[in-house]
Image 1 (cartoon, helix red, strand yellow):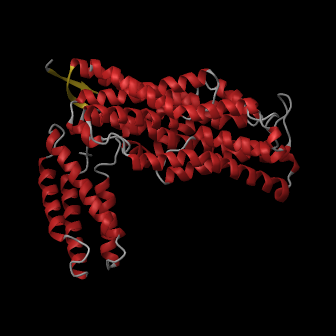
Image 2 (cartoon, helix red, strand yellow; image 1 turned 135 degrees about the vertical axis):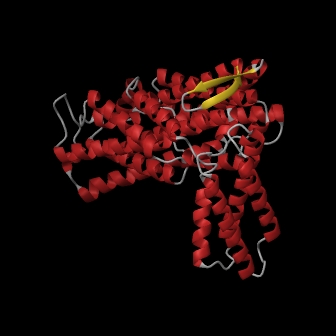
Image 3 (cartoon, helix red, strand yellow; image 1 turned 45 degrees about the vertical axis):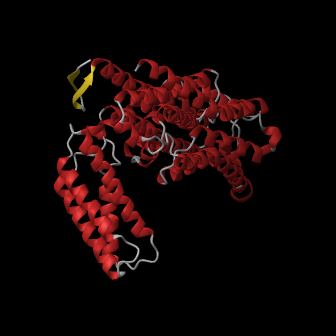
Amino acid sequence: MPSINVILPFLGDTHLSTPLLLIFLLCLLAVIAFEFVNGFHDTANAVATVIYTKALKPVIAIPWSGFWNFMGVFTGGIAVAMGILKLVPLDALMNLPIGVGACMVLAVLIASIAWNLGTWYLGIPCSSSHTMIGAMIGAGLAFTWYYGGNGVNWGKAEEIGLSLILSPIIGFGFAILLMYFLKHVIKYHALFHIPHGENDRPPLLIRGLLITTCTLVSFFHGSNDGQKGVGLLMLILIAFLPAKFAVNHNIPKQDVMTELNATEQVVKNISNLNHDKGINILDFTSKIEQTKKHLLLKSETDKENTYKFRKQIEGVIAVIKTVENDKNLVINKHDQQILTKNKEELSKLVEFAPLWVILTISIALGLGTMIGWKRIVVTIGEKIGNEHLNYAQGATSEIVAASTIGLSTAFGLPVSTTHVLSSGIAGAMVASGGTKNLNNNTLKSIGMAWVLTLPVSIILAILLFMLFHLFI
């Protein structure tokens, strides 16, 4: 079917056949739906403690959390989003028919949404991050089966997997330590009060602490989980419109040319200073010249030259990193500063997300936060422990969650907000009354969901990829 020229808001002209255009729009709706579901699925992680300690009423806590989730996505950067993109074979996707990318994106999104909705319906806290990573691995494996090559970046998958596995263990351990600190060092008895009845509200100071920790968890949840939606939306745009979104065309070509020339000169200086040791200067110069050539040829409608430019920029950045990491090279301070600055500037060409993408995901997550929150809140607030949350337990779990998620975001690693907070509450309960204070049935359900999420989402994504591949 011939291509049609359609103008979509924020996208400009698109030249997609009618079936692909419909699939593209379906993918856009699916990623917004995923982030919306993520919002109400994970809202409980932030608001359960303030609701069950009577620090805030639900009618205030939910919009408050929604707003700070929105702000977290909007101001949290894109490091986690770019980490998500590195899981899949972007280079191969840009060289294959658009339908292949469509199969991968739809498989990931629908598998993630299906598992998230299923666990939400059953009231089981489950990690949206865990689900999405599993779905991306599954789609990557299916891609490898059909097209060969390496459909999964296993190095990145291992890095992310360790983050997802270690974060709840860290949350559990630090919650126990913090509770012991509050009990044996702070010794503020009001912190350990269990509220009873609607009017039994915490003192002003404790209430402020609980609201602050709720705000921090909401913000950092947005900055981490929201970026996953940004990464997925960028995957869709690159898969369907690679010429337009594979590189950031908004950066002026003259600025890029200046940075390339400066980088070339600095590397030559370093090579001369080190008597040509450690740097293949002829190879690097050739790379720079090819990059300049395709810089002038790239455009929002030229897929081939834009793709080549992206690969060359990534090659230049890789050389800069190699030079920076080589401890045997002598580099003066001025040249080091230029290299670092140019690496950061050149990285913006391939690691970026338009403002409208971030805004779309921010709104979806913020609105999702305000809907469907109650099922998981009840599990978090009532069923992890055998007693009602006291103020110290609520504050401890949220301080641990906010710290862990914030650090993970700073390092560009996705982390499970659900598992960190659930394990934090479990740790706080253990510190209060030992393991007998835990509800084993609930923990078994959460543990079973944690174990099953990865294999189920992998299998779902593989099956969906195979299904879509028959029709797209």
